[in-house]
Structure formats: structure tokens, C-alpha cells
Length: 247
Image (cartoon, rainbow, N blue to C red; front, side, top):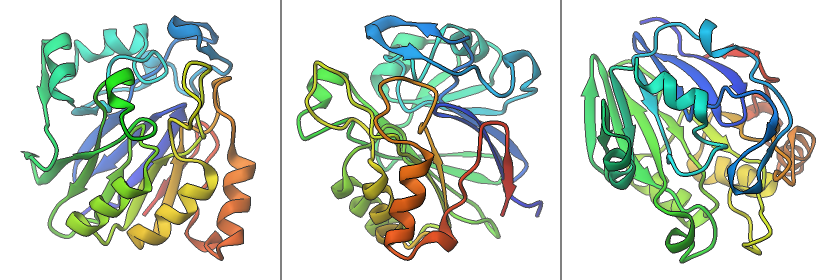
């Protein structure tokens, strides 16, 4: 079986080559500038949408925020055979979008994709920000990969670890996102990402959604420091936009 390869594109967008599939997380390919909800994008994608190539599956944690699905990303969905997302998101998007409720799974080729919980903020945040999900990828002879989506809760991470762990590779959304209307973190902080690595017993952690937007309060430097503090530097695979790693 070919090696698993992860390329960070920018923001929450990463290309995962796994089990013969090309999977893309939360597609965001718009240029920098102001967007809906008062969010400001500061960096362009490392790979333009026209150069991303064929995608078999989009893993879309949620469709309601432009830092997870922007205008260019929405156009890309039309050419993707399968978009896995929340039940309400699948209803809004239509087309090839398919709901993947928590703990349900679907099989694509040799890969099983499981929908897992995510909480985009403190308890009760889903009433304000809407549904969000994460994903776990498994397959015979393949590493187990966890994609957190916009999750801020270590309780959720513990639930995922209990049901699907241990995790070989964790792709964690870890920029400590905050917005004025909610006085709380909406994604993992650097410290919580390091703690999540321990909970998951992850052999490798690839942080995404740590730069490229003004509402991220933490970034690569704080992630590096947090993992060093917990003695986990050997598990951290900190990629700049455009870089990739094989596992």
C-alpha cells in the first residue's frame, strides 16, 4: 500500500492521499480579503484551486463559515464525486453532498470513513455556530487518521479516542480561533492540541487552521512551544503551507 501523504494547502485545507484516494479537507481557495461574518483572510492558498487536481472525497466539517468553505471551495464541490458533511450541511449543499452523522461510516474503495463529533466552541455553541463534524479514516494495512474539524473540546477528543483510538495521525485544527460575538475559543488552542495528542496517543500530529486568518489567536510558534512543554516534539509534524509529509 502506498504511503499516506498530507499536504497543507492553507487554513483548514489539506490534501490527504490515503488508501489510493485523494481527500480534501474544508476547501478554501479564495484570495485574501474580507469575507462574511467579519472574518478577514490574510494569506492565499499555497496551491491554487485550478492546480489541486482530481479529488475523490471532500471531508467538510461544516459549510456555514467562509473560513471552512468559501466561494472557490463551493465551486470545487460541483466536480467532486462525494462530499461528506453534517446532516444539515448536506441538505443545504445538495449535489454530491452526503450526510455522515456521528459514529456512522461509509466506505470508499478500500477506505472506511467514520463521522465523529466536533464542538465548535464551549458547550451549547452548536446552537449558535451550527453543526460541525470530524472524521476518522481507517483501512486494512493503513494508519488510522483523525481529522478534528473545527473542534474546541477535549471532552470530544476523549470520546473519539475511546471509540476509535489509538490514532496514528491526527490532523488538528489548532489556531485557537475566536470572534467578538463569542467569548470563547472556537477551535483547539496550542496547549489543547498538545493535550489532544496525548489523549489520542497519536504517533504524528499535523496542525492545520493555525494561520491565514485574523481571528486565529495562536499559530505555529505557540503550537511548537506547547508540544515541547509536554515533551511531544517528536510527534509534531508542523508544515508550512504548501509543504507535505509522508507517513
